[in-house]
Image (cartoon, rainbow, N blue to C red; front, side, top):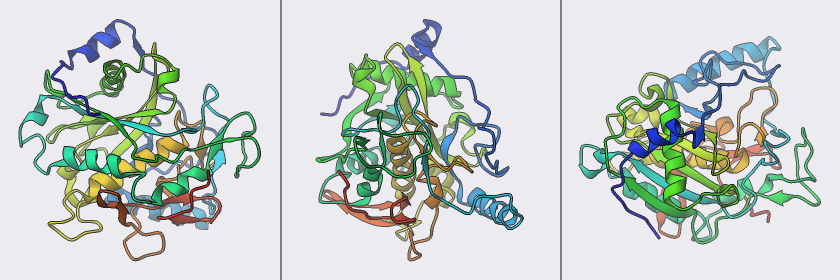
Length: 352
């Protein structure tokens, strides 16, 4: 199932120059949204569902509490449907995840000192197996002609987020032909996702409809300012001749240690890659429910997605992060927001 290659990343630059990919201009946040100045998305609205570092999350929470107390913030976490982007709101079929390990650095231990590549391959191979119900929370969300903008629940003739029975992983590409940029721009990250779509043969809009690409950068790199921009990862989409491409900017989060979740659930050394499963799971869940932001399910007041509203809740607390058992082991995961239970759920029945 996994595809391995050493094709050069130079193709990404060619894609931009040749017009195969068209990066979207940064949009102004919708009117009426509460803009938290400590959010990594502040003045960078393309960073949808950005996982803040734990330190930034603390600052965001204090600011939100202060402004809510003065009637300026939202007190509700309920998500509402955004009306769809080009008719697309959620991944309303079986999700397929492609992992893209970007750059020749992945060939050496210095590029992957903690074995993150294997860990992520196992994680997405395990999601949807062993009867895990972490994925169940997302299956309550929907899109389709029967879903109107502003709706907060689904019923009737709608298409629900699919459950990834048998695993979410669809393929793996080690793009080793040249080094990943030390400080990749957003256009380069998007271009790498489009290059991956071409590599996997997903060259039509229909072949990318239920697909997401995680562009994973090696250790020692700083994609979109990772390391000083107060985020651990984010997701977005780009337009291309292959149709809309949903992708995640997934830095080597262990480079920030506990700031991005290392040992958050499991004490060292067992928790060395906790941050990878927590952060990657966060972005995966948000892509499922808001595939082409912000046409899916978001908080009308804050713009937050289902993962944002439950980020960095300590283990043992209601809705706290925990190990989730899958068919091939257990992985540290965060909870995600559930409209129908009005809570952050780490486990939920499968709706469809």
